[in-house]
Length: 131
Image (cartoon, rainbow, N blue to C red):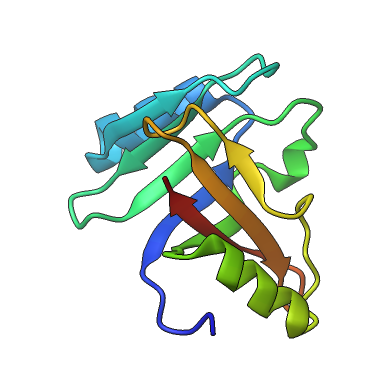
């Protein structure tokens, strides 16, 4: 069951990730809590946190359509058992919009495993397990 999960982060795609992170920090008081360079990508991904603990993932996709800039790309929830959550989502017939369970080996030390499903109206909902 996927109910009752704690929010992990809100993903926002940007046309200029450095400028956006600086603005959130300078104007809204966010703090950078993580930065990593995705393999093969020209721009880093940032995790920034507000004073209430809400975390945003800011990233700059390659060949990004600016019409989508600043829109919430995905909402991520914490998974304690990514395999069981993935099986539940598949068995329930949810549309998986990742290549199965994906891995980011260098994020947060031991890495992260995650997958995303689509809601009935198309937003992506991510379940993420930090290893």
